[in-house]
Image 1 (cartoon, rainbow, N blue to C red):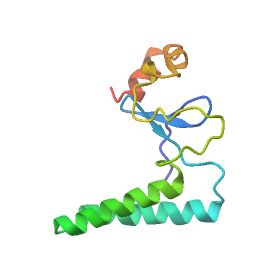
Image 2: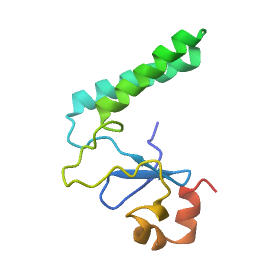
Image 3: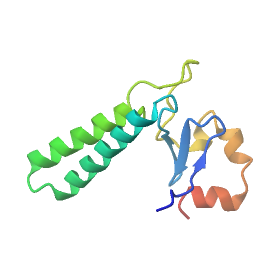
Image 4: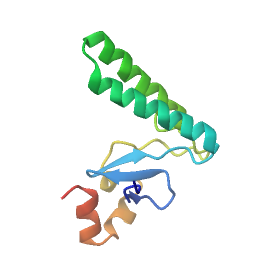
Length: 114
């Protein structure tokens, strides 16, 4: 299956979905580590959906969080220039506001899920 194309910020730190910035995977991860973390993430996400008790769901969600940390999508930022994590915010309310304003209406609407 082809990977869904998504709008990424010019510096490659975030992608935009439903009008929010989400941190990309750390590009410095070697391929085997990235693949292992993605596999763990997918298994944990399946476990969340299959959980039949609140305890099982909590454990599965903790495993999702662990995999996201391994990928660099949560926890300390993977870039080294001191820029803050702006994940979860609308691009217009971040340091990416000028970039966002410069996009055409169709691209912004698609990234906002419209």
